[in-house]
Image 1 (tube, one colour):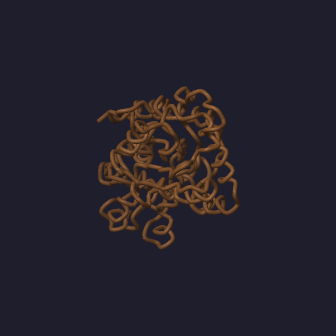
Image 2 (cartoon, one colour; image 1 turned 60 degrees about the vertical axis):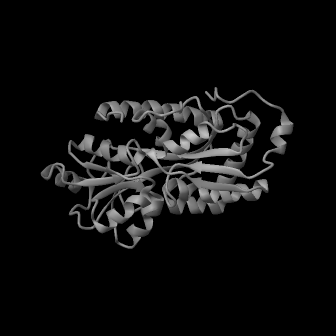
Length: 314
C-alpha cells in the first residue's frame, strides 16, 4: 500500500517543487485515449504550478517501454507516468516486464474512469451485440478486431466478449494507441475495435464507424442512445477502464500528496468536467492510498481473467 513511497522528507522540498519542467511520459501514440486525457490536465498543471508539464509519448510494447523508463527514473517528481490501467495491471502479466508494477511506482491520482465502446466497420452486418454474436457463431474466426496491443484493455475487452459469447474472434494488435489501428478499421481491413469513446467519437458521428455497445454497466452520457453490451445481447459483460498518474517508486510523500490534491481540484473544474463528459470519461477523485488499492484489485482481477480465457505470456 504505497510501500514504495519514502517517509516524509519535510515541507521545504515540497514547497520548492517544481523548480524545473516536469515530464509526463506515456506509452501510446499521439491521439490515443491516454494522450487525449492527459494533455488538458498537463496544461492546467503547467498553469497552476507556473512550470511546464510536458507530455511525452513513448509508444511500444503495450505501454511497457514508457513504464520501464519512468520506473527507473530518479524519484524526484520531475518524471511522471500517465498510464491506462491495463498497462500496469494486465500487460505485465502477459509479457516479461523489467519492473514490478506493484512496487516500482508511487500511485498519485486516478484521472479518468470510463467504459470502452465497441465499434464496427459499416460493412459488418451486425447492429447489436446479439447480432454480432450470431454472426461470429456463423463464421468462426472470420471477424477481426484491432487493439493497442496484447494485454491492453481493448484486447481483453475483445477476449472477454469472445469468451462469454463462446465465439472465435481474430485479434490484430497494433503498436501505439487506437489511432494506429484507425485507418485499417475505417477502411474495413479490420472489422471491430474496442476503444475509448473519445478516440472513436469523430468517426462514429461521421458514420464511418457503427457503435455496437458500451462495455460498462451503464451507458455513456455523451452517447445515450447506444446500449451496453450486456443489455443488447451479452448478459454479464462488464468492463471499465481508467487512466492515472504515477511517480517512480520512492517519490517524496509531500510531492505525491501535493500533486494528488492539485489534480483532484483540477478535475473538479466545471470546464474540465464538461470536456471529460464529451470524451465519455468520469472524474473519480481518489487519494493515493485508494488509487493504490484500485491498482492492486485490478491486477488480481485481470490475472484471473487472463487465466480464465487462457491467454499466454509472450
